[in-house]
Length: 89
Image (cartoon, rainbow, N blue to C red; front, top):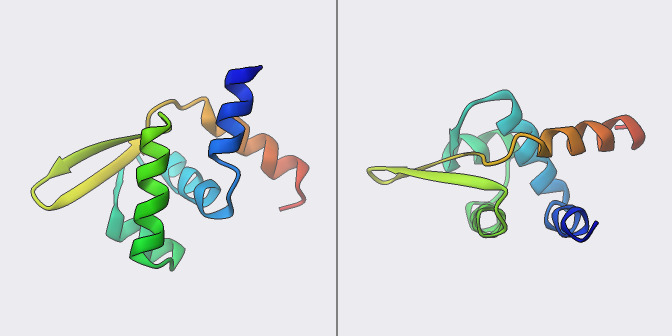
């Protein structure tokens, strides 16, 4: 239960849930692609992505100047589906 609580805390933000949703539909996206789709400021998005990576939610792959993000554990998508079905989204 402690691990579940930690994971729920780590994603308990609308922007983070949107990032997970985007990455559940794509294998990987770079910061610009995520930012365009979320219409989010680069600095705020970078903060969320860095924190999610540090907490083991995201993988990051560098290619030149670009960072490509993907979901580290696909089970997080199940949590997202539960939230969507219960929250009248």
